[in-house]
Image (cartoon, rainbow, N blue to C red):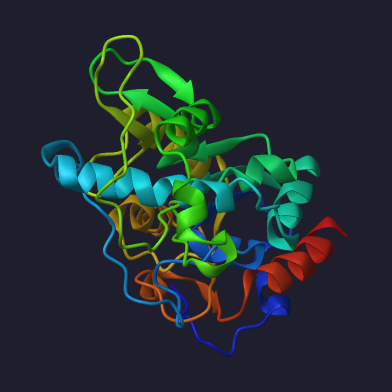
Length: 280
């Protein structure tokens, strides 16, 4: 592998990737320009996401989560894809990108027009019952939570004044009075249809993501610090099989030593220029 350096440019990435079919791995950094903060960017505040064990094992944690999510979901559903999402969708339409593996739950790749997307950690707009397996839309649950908690959103204040995390978790403290909705079919526990810390990504989903990487000629990583193994494993796999790895991210990543080339820059502007060059 060629040592990754912060001096690498979009032109360097273009020269390396030209003529190759790409698999793409994205993280929270690609959505920051859509108004969704990331977890581990250079300017991100410390975050302690709730674990699966906390959610299912403690009613207080669960109530706290749903109260915060009730506020945060209103923010997330109004976000639009940005230039980085659109650049990847254009590259897929042009046959350059074979598919996108995303660690995000915001569905912005699909909104931008990407078709072959693996939502590695699920997505925020569905809710699943842990007892009977019923799946409902997050919009439906929003209506139920609003009815159960009249005036709650108004008491929190404007969403624009509340800090929102990438999984739609809003930073609010007073949640003791919030009422949680259970499954209308069986009375079971409802959980967002996303992979929590402490859970494993379903094996078929992982296999489908590996298949995209295997079918490609190179891996492009955009907006991920690669801190968690769920994303880093694809970088390790690509590097092990001799595929070039290009990382576009602000700040260091856990995969830098495996990268063929690293561009330390924002994803929106970098992917826009890179897409135009590769399309040409």
